[in-house]
Length: 237
Ligand SMILES: [Zn+2]
Image 1 (cartoon, rainbow, N blue to C red):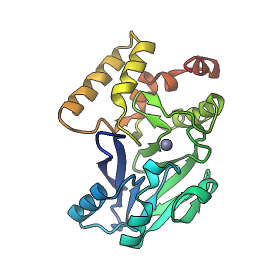
Image 2: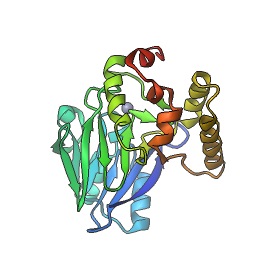
Image 3: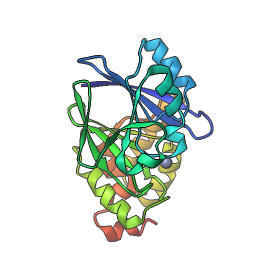
Image 4: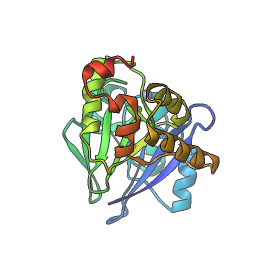
């Protein structure tokens, strides 16, 4: 099982989330998607941690810019998709679709989800019921298609939809407010969406991240996940 700490980075501009993951059995830790280093180092110091790994969901600078500094500071190994090896700074360990990576005794399953970028992966920890979705899935919306097509993204969305309902998902940015307007426009009469938006507003008012929320709610309230067919999905673009 992993323990997860959420770290807000690039606050007020891109509102990225980095995550600190600790394998409870061994104390082995990792930083996922360090878009900058200052808030992450501060949190690691608070927790008394020396991360052994840096995990990336994809190559974009606002997910990897902290790689090299953290790698040097902690002598950590950078882990990312083999497909993106040429553009992930400092990569040491390559992972592949349907492969796995062990953080101590916690196993992550690697799921390729092309669309936002061609090499984007999900880090899915089934035992801990947690999935790190990077810029593939946000609260109530999905990531922009920088390198892939809507059709490719639909295949990736199907993979998210196939994960268990009680999985908590951890996105790469705080974009809930934007997602809420989009979702409300597409699903004006979904009572669960109104509840979702209320929960999000309450958390934001308390200065808390909206994530994590269960995929069950996302499958119901996120128009992209709610689509029942490729045709319905493509209409959203
Ligand atoms: Zn990105």
